[in-house]
Length: 167
Image 1 (cartoon, rainbow, N blue to C red):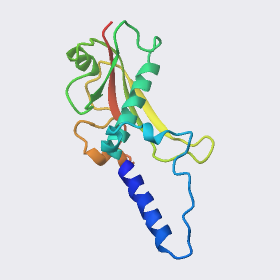
Image 2 (tube, rainbow, N blue to C red; image 1 turned 90 degrees about the vertical axis):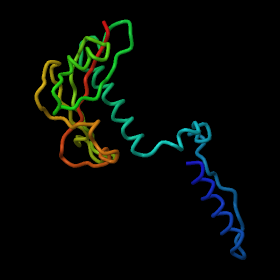
Image 3 (tube, one colour; image 1 turned 60 degrees about the vertical axis):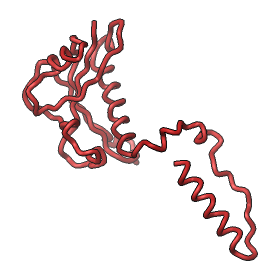
């Protein structure tokens, strides 16, 4: 991101100086409310796909948090695990394998890209399942998906996650 901002600024300055009669005027390149310069350097290394997957994972954590009356109780951190709904393991089994043996829910979620443009517009969908379900449900296989599948807003379904806790 910093590289692109620097290149853009240099191009602007070159054009401003190279065109006769045009003077470079100081422009506010950064919104003072947003501290772009404070972003970690690793931000530049993140692809749009990585950021989109991370957003999906955070939404899955929120879905897990909201799927139980306690919001995910216990004295340890709770986990969200990717689940292949076409696989042979239930969320109960996956949670147990992870060391967090209590499964609170399986959630399948997906959201539409872009900003809502009208009140009442559908922007996402979800399904809540029990933890013992092994058979196929409404969910996609994130571990088996291509990196750019996160940007594909087709109707192949939501991604499925297991909501796990230790106690």
